[in-house]
Length: 146
Image 1 (cartoon, helix red, strand yellow):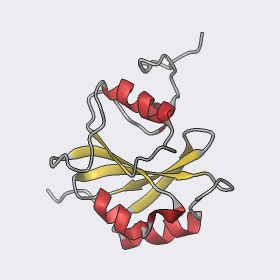
Image 2 (cartoon, one colour; image 1 turned 135 degrees about the vertical axis):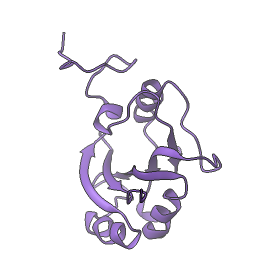
Image 3 (cartoon, one colour; image 1 turned 90 degrees about the horizontal axis):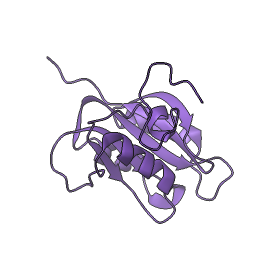
Image 4 (tube, helix red, strand yellow; image 1 turned 90 degrees about the vertical axis):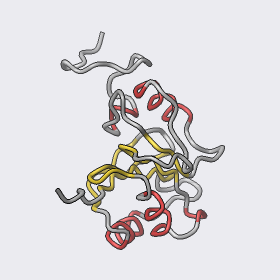
């Protein structure tokens, strides 16, 4: 039996799963943008099990704690996609940019992410492998002034 280091495991029973790697915690409101048939359902289920709710879409219209953006090289302008992801994000919230891993079809060059993030007003922090085909880059939005 694996140790959870004092942390709760997700309902899928796997501490260290995709939701854990993305710092998704119970009760968060997570918005999902860019879903398509190639999105990894195991990542989606892990997140929805952890938050005990469905992720909301782009029409939600209220603030969210995190935004999950599925983005492929063929999806257009990355800066525009990131700016769109900021629409409902609470100040200081995280955008997780999920892109196909290097060598996979429609992979996004890491240099493109590094260039687009500051143009969109975001700070790039970490990258995590969330599945065999997708990696996630954490982008932080500026904190809301007090």
